[in-house]
Image 1: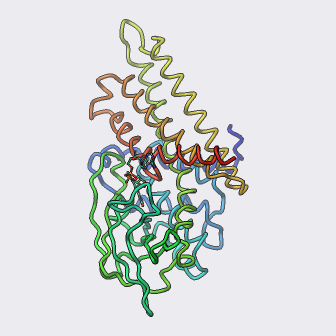
Image 2: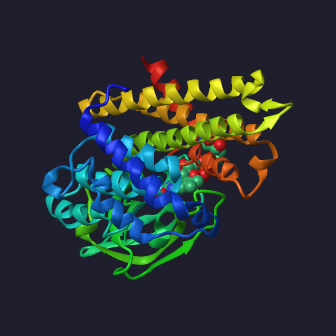
Image 3: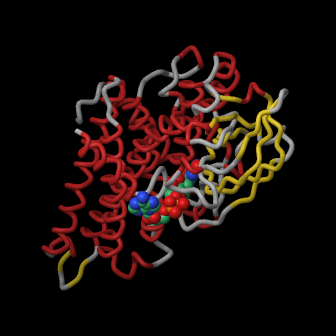
Length: 377
Ligand SMILES: Cc1cc2nc3c(=O)[nH]c(=O)nc-3n(C[C@H](O)[C@H](O)[C@H](O)COP(=O)(O)OP(=O)(O)OC[C@H]3O[C@@H](n4cnc5c(N)ncnc54)[C@H](O)[C@@H]3O)c2cc1C
């Protein structure tokens, strides 16, 4: 199915089983309370879920992008929130250290991140800087001994529970003046974190980080000074595809929940699935889900081969995230009043889906990237 190898099928099935048996039983209650379980991160780390992009040298499994996408999709079918945690922890933080960090940084941080012993976050967004990340205003001014970081980061996934932050800050006034730093959130003075309440995906914590005259050693720099913008573009070039996989997992759950309901709910003397207008909605959900999966797996294979294009990553992200919102809306209509009830998870699907068209770059921005590449060709 979908040209997966037997190893990839085994990885996918392990993730599916874990999500169904270990997350599903408590997930809806935790979502309504906004509870995050650190032990779940460690369990997934022990199963090797976080290490697919990391070679064995740093304790990863090295099974590649498509494997990591399959794991993300399966976790997201049950919990888009924990799948989001997973992407931040492994793809954004460990992945960036792997691509841009020094050998010492790789050895020090990557094994702990992918084992789930250390929780990581990445911090680009600021109260006045969202889509236009080149306008980052946080500053990291260099002294003879260290860098002094000042500024506020907002909407940072994992921030309230994180140990380590990958922070993008300005070391010079130009676009080329952005640099990337690793900040130990517990051991560094001048760091405050505040949780942000949000609409959905409430098991994943999001917050603001305030840096006030925060002194960072020179060894905190990731990659070269002034190269942080391209590091951030590399990071987003990976995390966007995983956002697409999260959206795909959610869209798939919406379809299956709708199918189940269409078979069991009767109106006018027959299951509502017998009504052609319901059938049309189910068919539309199926076609979109299949198209998203085929597209995402193709881009993941391209990534494994090193032949991927930023345009296709944005296209997959745009298509799958918009599809998740439409699938959740359709599920809510198919469920009628029960979809609107807090006793059923359909309202959670709709709330969760809304994050997908914003996070890792809004849909408008993905459309701009796609069009820019098309017009350049
Ligand atoms: C749940 C969640 C988790 C997040 N996690 C992280 C994280 O871990 N780390 C992090 O750094 N950030 C994170 N973010 C922030 C996210 O990356 C930003 O919200 C996103 O990039 C958009 O920025 P903004 O919300 O400020 O919207 P804005 O940039 O203010 O955009 C507002 C609206 O204007 C549109 N718009 C903006 N510019 C243009 C344009 N040129 N053309 C057309 N339309 C435009 C946008 O599409 C959007 O509809 C997270 C956000 C959410 C919701």
